[in-house]
Length: 356
Image 1: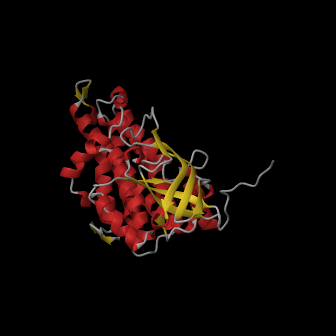
Image 2: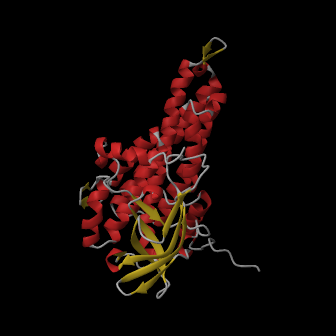
Image 3: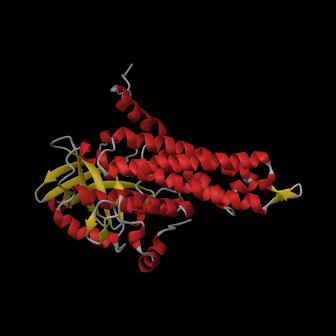
């Protein structure tokens, strides 16, 4: 499926009311209505209920790229970029992960060197969503003078910027993840994010994106539950609907219980975030536990459909694959679990002691 998203962007721009899903919560102005965290989360979840790829596109555009500019950019940068991004006149990507640094994002080695009038960026990024057709990219790079992570807004057509789509994915097929090479890419001083002067400046933004990623997994689980409930009522075996069998009923109940518990935890985290009381560990606990439960829920759905659970004719097979991606992105289960453990024990085991 070559370049699945780019052809539909003009139609989306014409017909979608972007405020439903795209605008950052807790931010108003520049075309953004300032949805609450809870309202934004429910919108994302409902989109993911149908297609997790579209929900992930929305998260990259608004929860990562736009919110980063809104929180860490200058007023001139907000004026320049946010309105066009909010209306989908432009698409933005968020380039943090690198080929050698995924979970260890604070150790990234893409560098930014100060030159007269701006900065020169060199390095590589891997997996940024939306990047094959992005008009602008928020790129994180290490300042060679301070050794701290800084943020830059890079034009998608900049000389020295090479973007190539990652092929052969079995999950999130519509999300255009790419390999990015930056070779002496010039960025003017006007496009350096003044509020991004160290990795710590990005921590709260990344914590919030974990909360929203978990809402994607809730939406996936809800969509699978809906499809299973219909399927079990319609399909008959041994002369009765599949819904009549006790084992199938028990699986449906387990799925529904998982969804209710996930929903309540995520709702509570949104409320904590809105009152500025959410900790980094709480965000990671939500991401780790909810995606784990959603993964079990979707797997139960695949079981209920038997062979039909692995073909594209039915919703379940695609959702099953997409859930595997959400389980990993925005921090794997293991890394998020260790962030929680660090908060509750005051001991970090994330960087193991070298035994070489």
